[in-house]
Length: 407
Image (cartoon, rainbow, N blue to C red; front, side):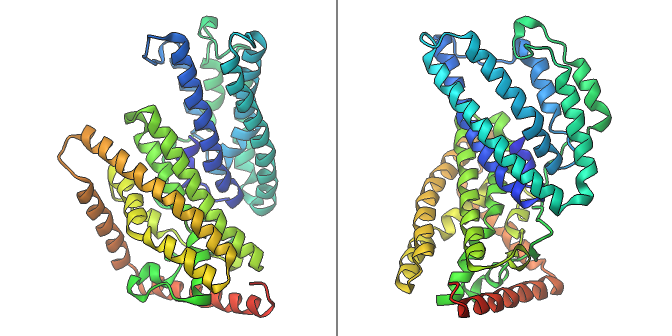
């Protein structure tokens, strides 16, 4: 659910939290799964069984009116309910005999406490920034609170034979069937265009050099929110067909791309840009809209493998230019992208083999390339003018700040 709502969430501070929470939760889920299999050895099956009704209720919580409403309910009610379940397990278990599980639970509880703190700060900003959207969010959050309040005290225990129907009835009037956004939703407070920089629309133009490349790289990192969205979409689309290890790799991939996005956002903030002055687009994520799930995975793999060589080059060029921060960011970016090319190859091979249609990775990359090219070709005169406006305004503001020694 956190993955599914990432592309469609507008509020920036909320959007930034979802990939990070997703990754932290995926680590806990993976560790708990391995622990359960240790305790049940040699039984290796993991089936819903008596937990089917419980899982059905939790899945219903995705049907929020917006990503902001989902996230607020997540922080105010869903995470606290999970924390309570973890704590009750911890109280009733044996801290010596079950010490490995206790360590996992302790980390899970600590993660949730920190998530609640950061989520509350994002909620405060949401109320100030998007006051007109507050009512729909509040209505959903209150409904989720009432629904969880109707659960039996030990709802997680199949032996309790808990009845989830009353909770579902409480949610029913407020649910909107969830559908993942296939075009990236962007916060209205940014300076927006479909293509956020000229070389996104006209690749032959190149990224520029020196000062222009500094600014261009900050916007490129900022706009890597699209890659976090695409990794999240791949989790949402493919998780049911993939093994548990896919969740772990894809969640890390999603979080890494979120970190790259924050590199650019932090650079702009440190230079003195406001959100309304930062260039924001969505075309790379949008290129996956007409494609099947495996080909959307191919979109992110295409970008990773096609442009990975620029990472090491810019690490050196920024250092030579005297921009140690950008050089440092690019060095870690480069290390991440090397891991991501492994993820992409591994999971494309896995899903293509399972698909059994004979498609190859190279064919998927070609499909991705054509989709990107088609979106560029479909750009209107208004798109072109918006991109040039965004570039001009961003470079003008950067030049002004540079004269104030902000760079």
